[in-house]
Image 1 (cartoon, helix red, strand yellow):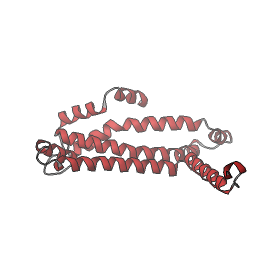
Image 2 (cartoon, one colour):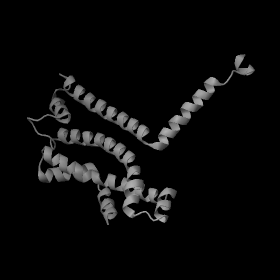
Image 3 (cartoon, rainbow, N blue to C red):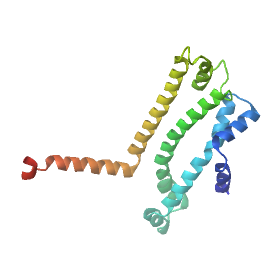
Image 4 (cartoon, rainbow, N blue to C red):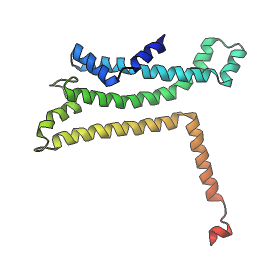
Length: 191
């Protein structure tokens, strides 16, 4: 039932849905927060469902069920720990989409309203003066870009450090490099 609602909501473009809801309800900070939450929840639902379905089929979960572990124990000890890394990474990556959507809404005049400030609002206010004072739109645009890039790099770091498979790959690469350094040079390499 929930996944059917997700499928219906995914059928509509996110930004178009945000524009529609904000134009009906009215612009403002609270409206943007609610609308972004309403339009981004389905991504989390799909990821959680996919991970739970794949983890439920692993050998250790099946073994725990066979020896008689209660469903609550299986959920809290085996399934939920496997959700933390992907959901943490997804949450950080989705924050970049929220930053971009808020800047776009503020640029269009449907987001944060003056006297409050937003980088999108700063770009919108400076667009009329682009040939006279180019820095009015350049620096807010650079701030948006640098913020999104920094958040993406942070999300990648979180994914690598929290995912057990990535840790194993990193450990294996480090061991391979260490073995190559310790290997004595052969006659072909000396020449």
